[in-house]
Each structure stands twice: as structure tokens, then as C-alpha cells.
Length: 235
Image (cartoon, rainbow, N blue to C red):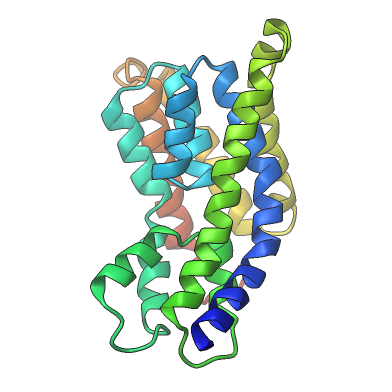
């Protein structure tokens, strides 16, 4: 009975996340289809990667012809924070939880599920609760992706192709509110843009592929942000 209660509690905790994921996942499916990525690869990305920002960036890199290593490196950098989230959450999981359970739970950790789990009042969290929480969010993400791919199949070619601009609109929509309320984020964003521009005009760097340009700009901006605004220092 206790397991059933934990399962239901996890599902309830994951429902708000799932509701928020569905429209974003549908957008991802539409965008991936518009760039010519096969349907099965799009769905497999959501099944295996399960990381919204990395998947959107991955689609962009695939569209510009980036190499596999460039995509892997960029995804690794974007998802590096998951090491920290997993490490933090592992201290809140019931002692004695097997490595098999821990590996399954760690796969399903996202920014949103980590926040929900971290804010729980319980001193120790059951792996059953966490698995239910993550699975609820994961199911919504994969289902939304499949729906997006299905909807894109029925759209006119001209409309599907025009969806490519939605990727840029989405990132601008995410960036602008953050920049308005945070000087560090503004600095990091400007650094990334300036670095990307310099790579394009400096003779010995402008031959780099778009994928490596993104990687270099990302690392440079992150390092400068970390140096000038270390953790714990207020604006």
C-alpha cells in the first residue's frame, strides 16, 4: 500500500511538469520535421537524450551539417549540469538504494524534476516516488514529440519548412526575459555573440565548422561568466 501511495504521489508531482513539456515537445517534433530529420530519429532523440535544450541545439547542428563529434561535444557541455544535479539529489535518496535504481533515476532528471524533488519536505525520498515523477515527465516529452512529428506530416511543405524560424524565435523568447533581469546572463549572452562574430572574421578561425564555433563560443562565455560572477556572489 505504501508503494502505491508513493507511486501516486510521484505521478501527481510530475503532472505539472508533464503539462508544461507537451507543447514544447510538440514544437520540437515540428521543428525536427521541418529540418528534414527522419521521424524515427526525432522520436529516438526524445527517448534517449531527453534534454530539451540539447535536442533543440542538436536539431540545429544537424541542419547545418555538423559532425557527430561536434553534436556530442555541444550536448555534453549543455548537459554538464546534470552531473551536479544527480550528485545533489543522490544525497536525498533513501540509503540502500541500488545502483541500478540510481542509474534509472539519474536518466530521468531534468531541471524541472530536480527542482520538484529538491523542494520536497521529506528528508529522504523513495526511489519509487522519483521514478514515478521522472516517468510522468518523460512520457509527456516523448508523447509530445510524436504528436509534433505526426502533425508536421499533415502540414503543407511550405508551412513545415517555415517552421525553422521558430527555433530562433524560441531561443530569443527564452533569452530576453532572463537578460532583462540579470546582468550576468546579459554578459554571458553578449560574450557568446561577440565570440561567435570574431570566429567568423578572424582568418585562421573562420574556416571552423559551425558546430565547433558554437562549442568555442559556449565555453568562452561560460568561463567568463564563472570568473566574473562566481557562485554565491550577488550582482
